[in-house]
Image (cartoon, rainbow, N blue to C red):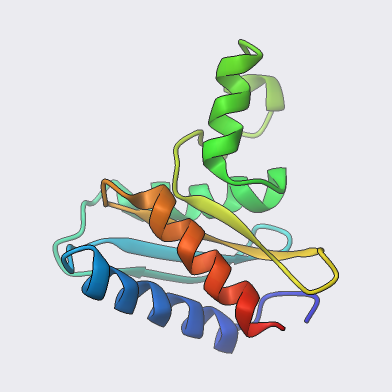
Length: 137
């Protein structure tokens, strides 16, 4: 696979839902899946999920795919190098945990997942991306 598909995005979102239900108390959250260029393929907001996740969750996935790294790592870089996010000249970038790129078996980024509304956004996104990558093997 060289780019995210809707069918695969649905599978990824379904896994995130099951993961949150089984391991994170089933709290309301949002999930976004973007393709390799950062365009939203799928966005789901659970009933009662925080409204700010409507914009923030897709932005996490977008940032992860555009930077080719988890948003938690991007945040760490900004802090380590004392950079302002505006340095990157992309108003859609966010520097919060919860966005993780998804790579195919060749190591190419084919998309990303964003999770929003949970205390464990970064952990859930990481575990969801790992699941997605395991399905590509």
